[in-house]
Image (cartoon, rainbow, N blue to C red):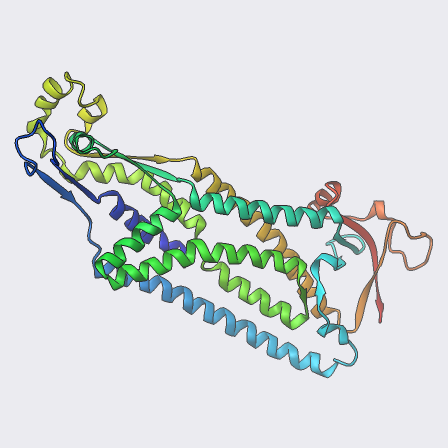
Length: 384
């Protein structure tokens, strides 16, 4: 599935990290502008593109199986609905989940119902807006920086180039896009499409779906199809995969860089320490790396990315569970409809199952009620 994309993102990050080109330039104190030229790059091979294609095809196949599974269930249920559609025309009416009254049958105790309060509705809208802003910040702000150390850093400074480069999700994607078009590499173009689709377009689509589940009207069949589409879309979103790939890069890239030259530069270590270090041209960190090293660390944008992932997951799980209950209740309530009794109703009628304060409400619903996000009702089942 999508977690296999970690390797793809990691290899792409390696390619950008180890793409180094430095020359002597036009420094006046050097005898020639072409005294030296060093270039380091990683060239992806067919194996990477084959693996990426296999991951994409795996997700596509899973999406197809999910769609067919849901369609088979829907067709079987539709036959039952068609036989009794005159008894329950409400099956085809579009209801909004924000206005729906849910019924719950706990493991012990009488039934109860709940619905979103104005504060709960406002909370969903505010959370959606905040997550959208955090997503934009996570896209545009630097999430990681790469700093070259050792003799390579000195050569970059002599060339007038900063050895430290910061990357955001947008800049990473942009670099891949530019290289793909410059090299006219079909495989790189394919990876570019996957990155842009999975890390930019799909997360925004998932957020829009979360909002639509609550505030858009759905018939029973429409809600079923919407949930299936939601499952398919969620299989592609990769913000959490990017966050994990960046964490892996922070740990692994410096180790990989240390093996690139290994002990091949030991002959220059004494010169760097006795001459370059005394002249203040290199630092102690450069001495430890000798010829070439890479430091990778998080930037502040990673915190926006992590918060965005956590908030999106929390809101998505909560809304999706409510949406599943919304579908299940509308499918099962074919011949009967729950009747709710609010706290303001006059108690004492025989159909009351229990006083509101004695209802055994789940811990989650109890917490939401204390926060003012939902209101809880008494409920019994009655025919239409």
